[in-house]
Image 1 (cartoon, one colour):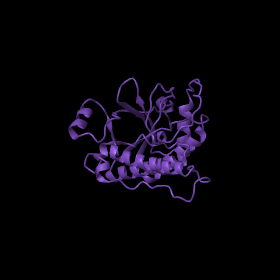
Image 2: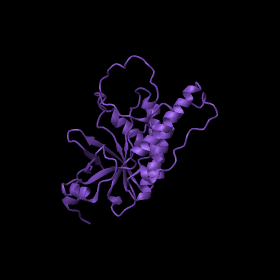
Image 3: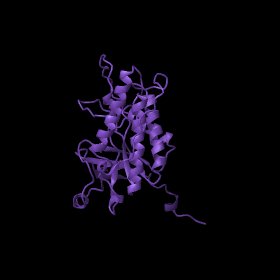
Image 4: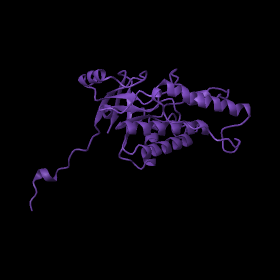
Length: 262
């Protein structure tokens, strides 16, 4: 059998495809059909939608605040060795007024966004537990509604920095569990290209409810350009390179633009 010269040439390496979408962090519910159609006409591939709204956030924050206050009054800490025989609170299922996302013919075109105020990397076991409960609750509900893709905010710390090893392990296990809960969903992990120093930006998370020990501010360190990549590699390797797991990030040069590589 003879082969032509074209058959022996190596093909070009496969390159990732990029999809551009719209994300509005102030949005409290899905877009209307008219609004979504307008975005598609502008060349946007997809738009994100929150799974829950401010009512659900207020309820979860109240649960965490009340339990932390109870521990403080009893001079206890939320650890397995110092906490008395008291079960941690459980986040009950959603009620209709806590979400604007419902099953509909168009819901399969939505890209859901998990509440960014959870802290899966928290060093406080109670806050980390509540965050995992919220994650699984929202993933399960989004899957029930018929959503196909879901975005999870990336880890707040990288490995080998400020307790990042334990934090990253917690985060990876939570994502691995969410992949099992949402067995029909595609997961996008919102990771920055590299970890930039915080420039006066404060995000209210569940960890903001606990008292921070007073002390000197950490000294500024040089930005590690590969720390975010190492974190992403840890997450996907823990999840055994699941084919439903992708990385995505916001384009800071173009407001409200979200992109992911597949």
